Image (cartoon, rainbow, N blue to C red):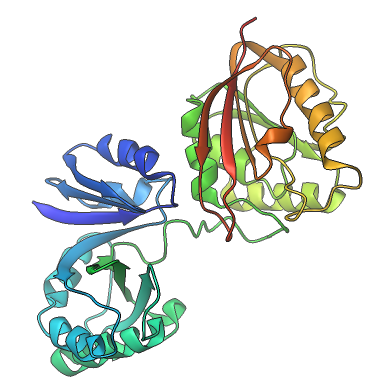
Length: 343
């Protein structure tokens, strides 16, 4: 039985836990702030197919009594002497190739004020691993064969080794970025919230760089989207090409969509937030018109998922709010709102 933990976006813990639990031989043992712990009795490779988690790690150790004082740096170094990184590397070699002479990086995150920095923690841990195992440390994760994660939560720390060669949220298709581009793991979570199925029609009326469309297409959905910015349309088409998926993408005005009434069972979109992307008119008026169009084209028993930092501006005549979920994203706390039709 291999112990693992996944890190996810704050607010998406239950969604990521449900996705992890769907894997054969995996059982959830704990769900807490941004972290889902589990045990895996089967092969580890399927864990790399997860779409809603930021990253997945082999569980190395748990340190208790992590305080804010600077003397913790020596303690981090001492604790790191006992990390079984060689066994973790051996397990990872069953999933992907890594060299014997390893180059490793360290990622550190913590909650609350500390009298030490993340970089100081990295060096304390790196010095121990370098001395004990002869591995080479690099501060640049892109140069590393393995990444060691130190996730400090209040007075506890969870230490793991990344299973994949890069973070789960770093999709290889995200080559063309746009202002306000959506985090792929959040897009995948939104799709799960409205139960997007293979073969289903999925619309994103404000597609940006195409993250939602691509994640849906990778699930087997038939996707269509557009944006009023021609550069956004170009970015979406390029990213879809890189992801090797297909869909209909065009330049349009989301307030007047060239689509039939009731033509889509699922609509998922990241509406402009105002501070995130520029809308050349009063935001409330824009939201009202776009909501009207989405309500017109949603099919009977359809579902709409909308991400915005101003959910109070959403207005529908017939659709009902089914679920509201606040998350943490880019230093803000936007809301995913799920609406359903009663027609």
